[in-house]
Amino acid sequence: MSSNKLFQISRACYLALLLLMTAWFGNQGLSGEYSLIFSLLWILPLLAPLKGILSGDPYTYAWGSFIICLYMLHGLTLLYVTDTALVFAAIEVLLLAILLITLPFYARIRGRELGLGLKKKNKQ
Image (cartoon, rainbow, N blue to C red; front, side, top):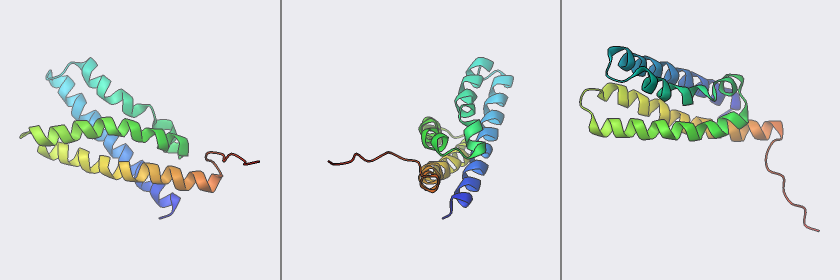
C-alpha cells in the first residue's frame, strides 16, 4: 500500500476518532455523568499529535501509536463491561484497530521515502 493511501486512511480515522470521543465525553460532561474536567482529560491526549497527523509527519505517526494504545484499553474494557454503550465501544475499537495498523506502517513507509531512520554503525 502506498504512503499516500495510508496517510488518507490514518488521517480520516484519526479525525473520526477525535470527533467521536469529543462528542461522547462532551455529552457525558454536559449531562453531569462526568465532570467537565474529567471529560477534557480524555480528549486532551488525542489533541497532542493533531498537527503532525494532519501534516503527515512520520515521527508523529510513530509516537502517536502509543497514545492510541490508551484509548484501545478504554475501548476494549468498555466493550467487555457495558450493555448500554455497546455501539460506541464497537466503533471506538474499530477505529482504534485501523489506526494501530495504519499509523506505524505509514511512519515506516514514509520514513523510508524521506530517508529517515536509525543510522547503522560502521564496522571498522
